[in-house]
Amino acid sequence: MVAERSKRSVFDALLVWNRRVHFYLGLYLLFFTWLFAFTGLLLNHPRWQFAQFWPNRIQSTTEHTLESMSGVAEIDRARDVMRQLGIDGEVQWPAAQPGNGPFTFQVSRPGLVVDVKADLQSGRATVQRTRLNAWGVMQVLHTFTGAPAADSRNRRDWTLTTVWALSMDAVAGGLIVMVLGSYVMWFRLKARRLGGIVALGLGFVSCGTFLGALRWLL
Image (cartoon, rainbow, N blue to C red; front, side, top):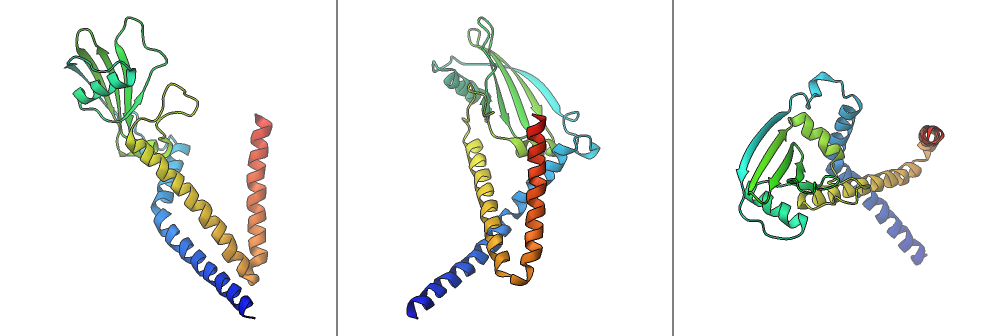
């Protein structure tokens, strides 16, 4: 009897903690979820006029003088050029550096793309900045990962990119925990099990239909 009461007490405590976790995770993830839902709509409807950002971009080109370069590796030289130019962000490399041409690379961050062409021998650099408005920043945040997964040449080398990526991992994990916790709370409501089963089944069928159609098309 005592063991049964102890198990019951532990189970009740877990249910209480499940509700608390669901509640506070929902509050914490609320704005992240809204951000991704809204930017997802923008990406899905690129012709919405109020959210146009690329035609409204601001571009500027400047010339700069560079000091002698330090470092042998490309990333070290790029960081040195960025330090001298006052640029910060994620370094993106072209497919290949031109043999006798300038040292070229791109620096990106939400709302700003900087193309750098540096002549290391003459110590001159041409910098083109492309600035995006707030709508552009919001859409970039939806897909900003630092480097494409299939691109072996580029990798994350900006601290804020790593922080953002880890934050999105945490958001994904939090949503999974919330969904699993909601299943537990739903199953405890006997009067609503049938409706929940119908909703769960419809969701499963809808998702499965999309996945099956994509597999058939591919």
